[in-house]
Length: 282
Image 1: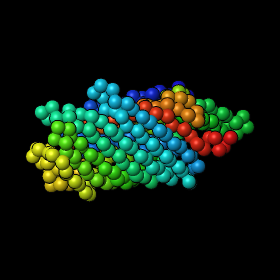
Image 2: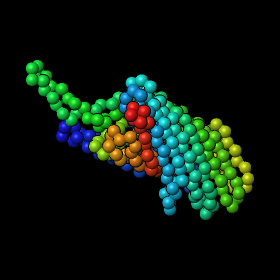
Image 3: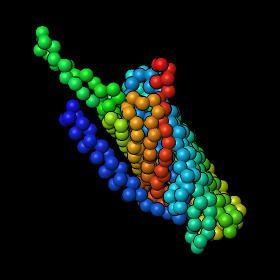
Image 4: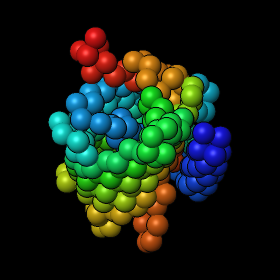
């Protein structure tokens, strides 16, 4: 039992360090044509798991905010997971030469994949006749590994004040995501890393815009599509088997290669996760 707790604690530390490393690697920009959502972090563990989560973050000082996120996950058979998510963000920024603007983005999509849950062993029972030992698994505690392939589509708008112009872009995203989840007594951690391809399918620029602002849209069109990494770190509070738990998620983008896409580097989310199947079982 103690060895298992030590291993889980060490794994939790590694996940936290990886998350911090990737999130601090994200750059910043004065124009924003994409903001990452928290991905699919429903942590399905067994057949008939049905989970839903909802999160919101207000805009506080310079922190990214005014975003909402909904997720739904279901496992129809063992080792098969189906997830969907909706994300919306609204923010205000100061651009070049003190030009103020609002950024609006929404996206929605789904993913399908597989998972493997390894429960923690908490007690050893020895049969007096045979001498064989068996372990009793802990309720909800353990390690979970999963992998998903997904698709999102959405729209992002940069609305400039002063010039009173708008750049509006539709996009779609394909991605492969791998995740690891750790469940302890009253705290859990989830870390996901995805390889994503973002493809802008349609764009409009209208109103009064400067040449520099119009050039941003031209650069995106010339370098479309974009490939990058996204990461998400989720800390959940509550017993593993509790039907409702609170969480904090930090998601970030790490672009690589010859990429000219300007992004909002990170998003943060406060919310709750509910195990709907728990109420049906009751």
